[in-house]
Image 1 (cartoon, helix red, strand yellow):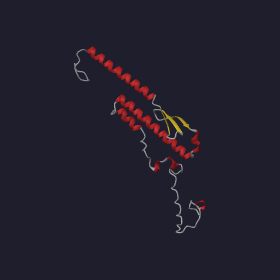
Image 2: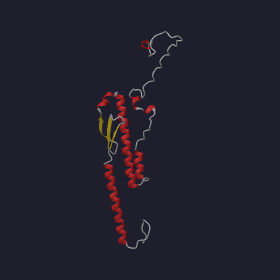
Image 3: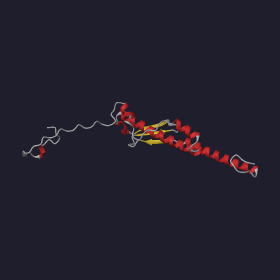
Image 4: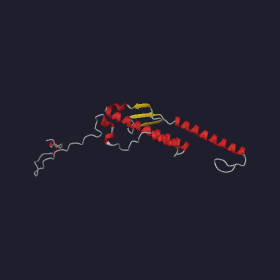
Length: 172
């Protein structure tokens, strides 16, 4: 007798035991994936530790913490930092979800393709100026360049002044 997975069956009872072993292994793998997905909670802090977010496997925000020093930041800058940290945390949760599902169904499975199709586009490593959240809030992303100082008049003669009374700022 030929079996769907290839090969010949010599003993139908042995074939049935093999199918039960495969089913049990697949069930155990599915249970492990389920537990891994349930525990796929990501907590991430901003590089300066002002913001800490926690997201669930679906990317839902479950916790937001601000350090006391966060109050020193302008609101628009703080909002941008919160959103940036949140996006990074959701990306990590999505990556882990894809890893778990690929381990269960295979990297090229329809399930993994479906999950990929539901994910938002990845944030670039250096966002373009138009995607910078601080610009939306009317705060420049970078401080304006410093104004150059006017050149100091050059004198060919030593006026005998000591250096303590010289205006070194160039503001005469």
